[in-house]
Length: 392
Image (cartoon, rainbow, N blue to C red; front, side):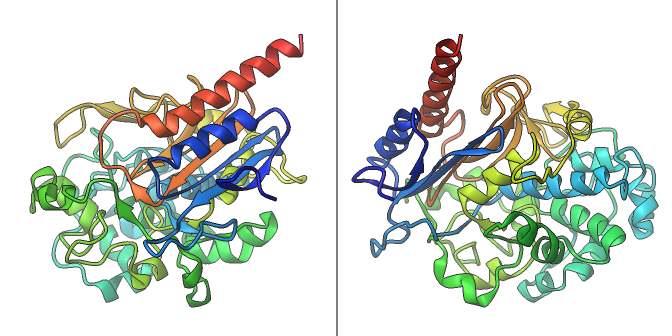
């Protein structure tokens, strides 16, 4: 149904002001989608604006690459397998994936690896686009990579390699890559429009990515100089670009969306992500993805402050999940989730029972707490507080 002249989708009674905050953001956004669940019930699932430069409308069927929001969903999938007693967070990665023990990595635990403490944030040598189509081959290449610090002793954001660690662990206990497991198990069970390795027949639904400030492209090499640790970690040694419109492949390229990069290129919609996080807080249509005990244990702080590569203090990490920090306070101290390059945010909050997702295709490139995203989060907080008071 139409929720306003600007949005399509569903809004539960009492949450119109949250939808209004999303609609108001379209003054500055190109296309957006936002979804919220509370205690297993859908409260809001709306979208609006344009999904490409031609002005085609962003409709409920529109999907998009979500950058590192992928890491949060990949982590929930792994935690589901922990719940099934197929994996243990405090067991060494090499217990499940023996090859990973090369070069002194044998003692690093699953928990530490998920918290960016494995010491392998990048791969040495040239990585070609065709290499990425062989997920198992990339996992084995990572297994043979020497660490840049003693595993477990420090942390450094594993922007892309995180995904191969998760996928290899999933493969070790299920016989499938994470993308295949999602396609055959999770997505059908939960009725999700969610892919890791987008099929050709779905490519026409994808929103096209752009940046808010085109001039940023000309200064990108100053932000992430070629050869720097961050450049190697985020671009696979120059193979790809986070920003669309550069001279190398990015997530507007169907070839990049078709491969499995579990830390970076999941393609989905806000409602599907919010549904997964809702199922980490409680049952959704009778199915709970991760139990309370496993979530509580997984959300123990593991990494925070200045990382191995120096610079400003960064995000706070638990076992694959981001926990609140200055730039991403989410809804409160118990929230957990993951953001994504360009201003995407997805999280769950046990105190309120809420899961929240905000996605956009015109990528923000500023650093800090995103004002448009948190306009919507604050509207949600206000409505939750109003509901709490009115129920007394």
